[in-house]
Length: 423
Image 1 (cartoon, one colour):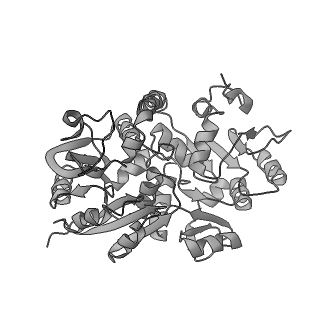
Image 2: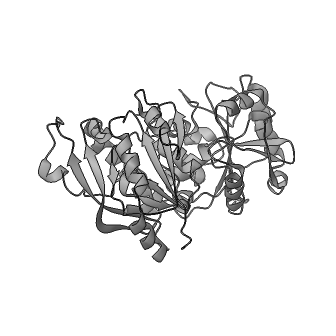
Image 3: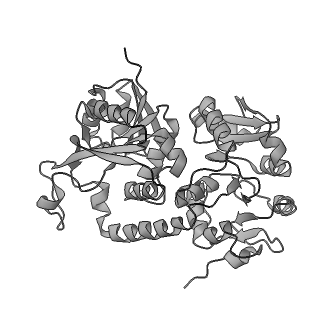
């Protein structure tokens, strides 16, 4: 029997009890094997979770409602396949979809992802919005839609996952990043996906703000072009660094992607950064922090350890093997001559001493985003309404801090020169 690669099927779910079983049945009816099915429940309040749990083959993840981008990213982090396919919980696949796409991608290894033609159809008795035009909106969509996508896992390492700041049009934003990074792709001219319109589609509910999001995507694309050849490595205590690379569509050039490091461990790491990063990464079954051990009871994530005393939480990895593989591969890309070091005050209540220690570190470019004012600390940069989530934190900071200018060293070392002035 031919040894075919594993395909991970990621299904984000939010209150789709009426359509979910049909979507899952269309996945298990695929002629392609092997597959793994990952369902990410984004805080559903209906029977969606019960329906998924009735399929014992499905790997089920539940999270508080954070949007479809975060749900897909949770699935990507858990995926073990060489290829990742996406299916929205209200759509359907034809039985030979994966077989056709994977065969084509294996024959064309230059392709980072493929889509297919699709058929939009209207659920019976659906009340359509005033702007709906059957001639335009039914039939074959004009663009690649998420439920047609099959992506090589390596593509996400190059340009990042879906942007959490986009609650809709997140697929178009990702496709623009792929275009800017010159990832090769193809839409196969065969109809393999059925997209259901039923009145509560997210794209319908957010149609009134679509133009504004599209303009934003174009502006971000223009900004990325000026950074595409820049080499830099961000050292960060949370996912903020990864969000920067994703935002600008740049390949990760640091191992600190999807990781979290508590304050004291992070400062210890920075005091001997090269020494720690040249030591082997090991793993522990528990944390030195009781709060982290409580988290582990609710949700597993690997605990990495460097030199026995610096603990790294691989918060978005499914297991230690995948965490180690990603860490070691990305570590080889680090640019020691162009380091940008970022800290934040989220993980400590009494932060003044930690900020003082951070201030004393000998890094040419360093910044500490803070949720309150700290006088007398040049590396502290106050961001109003700083949020817990690192990706949201990046977009919050980006309203006040010119990250692109900082990475290009456009101004001097005074961080206030990079503050964005409000209109």
